[in-house]
Amino acid sequence: MKKVLITKDIPSKGVELLEEAGLEVSVYRGESSLTDEELSVKCKEVDLLMNVGQYRLSKTFLEDNKHLKGIALASVGYDHIDLATATALNIPVSNTPDVLSGATADVAFLLMLAVSRKAFARGREILDGKWKGFGFTQELGQELNGKTLGILGLGRIGIEMAKKAKGAYNMEIIYHNRNRNEEAEQLLGARYVDFDTLLAEGDVISVHTNLSKETLHKFNAEAFKKMKSNAIFINTARGSIHHEADLTAALQNGEIWGAGLDVTDPEPMSAESPLLQMSNVCVLPHIGSATVETRTAMVEMASKNLIAVISGDKMPQILNA
Ligand code: DGY
Image 1 (tube, rainbow, N blue to C red):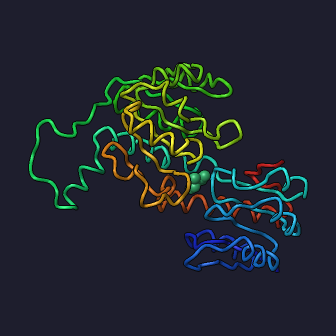
Image 2 (tube, helix red, strand yellow; image 1 turned 90 degrees about the vertical axis):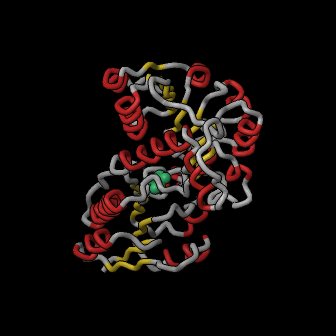
Image 3 (cartoon, rainbow, N blue to C red; image 1 turned 60 degrees about the vertical axis):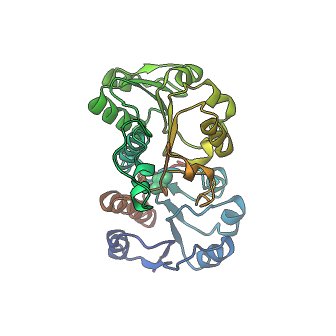
């Protein structure tokens, strides 16, 4: 009987599918995350791995576990695995595209709206007993109607965000990608621009790209200086696409107006971060895909990819074909 390790508790559907396919499933349910070494030790006893919670699967980890027959990432992002090494070792790797696009775009939209109305900080005034009654000019927000949304990475999630922004606020959509997406341009009336134009024209800039060498710290001091002073920066992709100290400085200096982050660098963000004290900043703990429907769909997809491996089939969502 082939064995699979799942690195965190998951919706039961994922386990059921694997068991129905004849796999012996072990789920790590410990409160704290496994260390690299503990994960490696556990993997020695299994044939397949479902990486839930984005454990970093480095070159060393993969070389130590080259017996693995397949790895399913329960995430769309795959910056946490050394894919080149997995490929060299003939370990097929899959991810979970599409199924989380709507939920993640919901969080980007939620952050855009929350920042525009300083909603988290205003709500905290009540929680902290500091709200002294209705004020007319204090901590005013700004409206989104007819403003320009600049998207870095108009792929699956970016398109969902653009649709929501256009539908709700008739926002003009501009975007920057490595390659133009003409289908999306037609669907959304989106305009392709270079990165500097995206920065200069966006009232809201929302990040929906992968983390890679090219995008690491792409939003740094230089980029923030090129943005509008009323601009809202939203990141639901990966924390290290922005440079957190530079973002903090840009907000403190009024170079941009506000920020909404579902991803931070590091994660978890320190409770001491000055960003958490700013009324124009909303921070969430990486909840982009955190709905019952989406998490269930993600583990179903991950399980089906592992089942494909034991059936001798190609993983449907293979990343390293
Ligand atoms: C992903 O899928 O990459 C998300 O960041 C985790 O839910």
